[in-house]
Structures are given as C-alpha cells and as structure tokens.
Image (tube, rainbow, N blue to C red; front, top):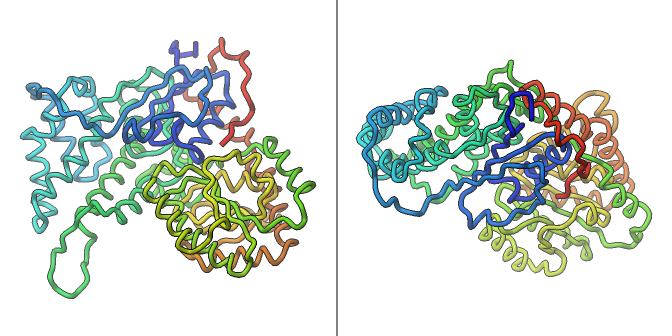
Length: 516
C-alpha cells in the first residue's frame, strides 16, 4: 500500500475520454498509466450515455484496479420523489444561487450532502423544489425578464441535472485525484478535495471553458430571443448562450479554487487560466511528451523503402468531429487535387463520436468528386501508417498541444496546421535555441481551405523543404518533448501529493509507450 494506507494511489477523473475515445487526452492518460506500473491507478469516466461510450478502445492495464462509469444523461424517470430534508433543500437553493452569481465557492456549503443525492428520486425532487424555483426565478428577475420564462426554467433544469448526477457519483478512495479537465470532471475533483481533504491535481490540456464556448456559440438547440426589434445590433451576448457560457466558466473556477496544483501545456494556456480565475502560484507548464522509439521503424521505412514515385500523400490523424474542422480539409483536398491529380488524402481516425458530422464530411467529399483521392479509413496504427506520408495536416479550430504533431516529428514528417493552441511553438520553437532548429511546418488561419491548400502545394513542389522541416520537427521533439521527462515530473508530483508507489506493484513491467 501507499504511505496513506489506501489501496488506490491515483484516481483519474475523466470526461468523455479514456478509455472510450482514441487520441488526444486519452493517449496521454494511457502514456502515464503505462509509464508508471509501480502505481495503483483507478478512474471514474464521465460520459454522455452508455450508447456513446460502449466499448473501450484501449487495453486497460491490470494496475488500473478501479474502473467506474457515470452517465450525464439520465433517461429513466424516477419512480417516486422522497420528502426532501430541509437542510439539503436549503443547501441546494444556495448552490443554485451561487452558480448564478459565478461564485467559485459554490460547492462549499453543499458538498456534505452528496450522499443524500444517491437516494432514488432525490435529484428530481430537488429540481422541482421550491428552493430551485426561488433561486432560478431570482436569476430570471435579475438577468432575463425580456426572455421567455419557460425557456429560462428549462435552461436551469438542463444546467443542474447533470451537475447533480456528478455530485452524486460515488468516489473511489484514493491518495490523490487527478482530473484532466475542469467542467464536470473538475467539479467531481473539487468535491473529492472538499470531502476527503486529499489533494486534487488538474492537468488542463485545452481550456475547457473556451472549448465549451465555441460549442455553445454554434449549438442549434439553444434558442435565443432578441431583446429588441430595432435594426441596431445587440449590445450584449444572447442570453441563453451567455448563461451556458457563464455556467461552464463557473465550473472551471470551482476546479481552479480547489486544485492543489494546476499543470498546463504551454504559456498561452497559463495566461488564459489566470484570466479565468486560476491562482498563478498553483500553475506550472509541463509539456506533453512523446516516445520516439515506437516510431523508429516507420521513420526507417519512410527514409529507406518509400518509392521515389509514390503519390504525394497527405495524412490527417484524429477524430472526425466539428472541432477538428474536417470539412475545411476536404475542401482543401479538392483544391490540391486540381493541381496534383494523383495526390492522396488519408483521414485516419474514428467517425463514431459525431456520426452526423462524419456523414456530412463524407457527403462533401463525394459532392466534390474526390473519389479515391480522399479516403476515410477509420482508426489506424499511426506507428505503421506514418511511413507512407509526405505531410501531416491539422485543420482544427481548437487544440492544446497535439501529440500527433510530435508523433509526426518522430517520423520526420512536416506538418501543416492551423495556428491554434501551442502549434506555433511546436512548429517554430519556444526559445531562441529551439527556434534555431528551424521550422517544422507551416501555420495556416482557421477555416481557410485556400491557405491549407496553398501550404500543401508549396510543400509538394519542394521535396527538399519537406525534408528540412521534417528533420527540424524531429530534433525538436527529441530535445524538448521527451516522454521520460514528462513521466518523471508526474511521478514526482504524485509522490509529493501523497501517492507513493505501491510496493507490491514495483516488479511489474509494462510497455514503454501506448498505441493510439
């Protein structure tokens, strides 16, 4: 056992990622778990519904000894609504009021009631309670009197129902808790810290509140009513979109408040977190790490065996989802194929996370007449497939520090990517010495098929430039983004937070890296 006497060293709190979704944060979690076989890990996975997260896509090692799922959507109506304890109802009314006023101490007076939330029917009873009505009615009077009252009522129900299910979730007993985002998983982590007094570590890859803001802005199910019939533009954001945006920002601030330490991937993320309420003294930049060894064979094959007359091949590796903006890539492919008729575009990644969007991308490719020039290939082993690429492309509208760029660098592949997250640092360097290595690819604006196509055509026309960029990116990954440095940082952090290695696991051996 660890020094605390607990069976579980580290409990990951995960939202919509490991072990059910491939790539990104999931790959990073798998790297940490495989890299520390001496630790006893557990996880609580928060997902939308069992249908959307039915089958793990990773082989979970045996030293992950606790595995739990919790679903944010609850379609089963309660059989009964129990009589509410007065203290619980009052604490709930205070919780809603504090959330409405963007207070990061919203959980402080409510967390002691989590056990009561597990009584069947209690969540529904709270959502129908006078305390819920009074708190949401006050918010309506304060902020929304020009909006439809019924829409306001349902908005607050949709805000609170999944949050209450998170607060009711049974937590494993662990020496420390590690959440990989703020949001619902971050609130569960804040609850863990408040209930147990044990430390919470937050590693925020992408800024959760910013990513939800993008989704809320585009959401068709949020219906806002204009507050004016004038021809002048609104002077404030649409009310219900602003309400959802405020809610997710508040959840982030709650997690920041209760985290003992906050790790992030690059400087702009750190500044964004401080702006959103994180204490600067808690923050530290810890870049992602990549192991070059699993890609060594792909690098060799690409350098020694790939035919000189192979068609110009562009790869995309990631989920086919709106945030990856695959539609821009498909349109850019049409522009490239117009100039390079034998070019091949390979989209390697799952299409099941957002099937409607994936279908739209496939229909667009068909409408543009791309045929076999662009292929949706599903999940692939990048350690094999990267040997056949000339360029990797990302067209995301939001990223943090994409592991796939570093993995492309491990094979010597240049990258064309939108200028989001830390992509500029990955391609061009963070420090003068780093920048002296040279550029590892080309940055493009968001949602710009023309700029993406132009960058790809320039690289197609200049094989020597491709080689220089690929070599620079490989050297940058080797010098500054090593897997071992990242693992050492987190191993030390876990120990400092009280999660000492479990002695009986020390002799176990696991692979040094995990597949995507």
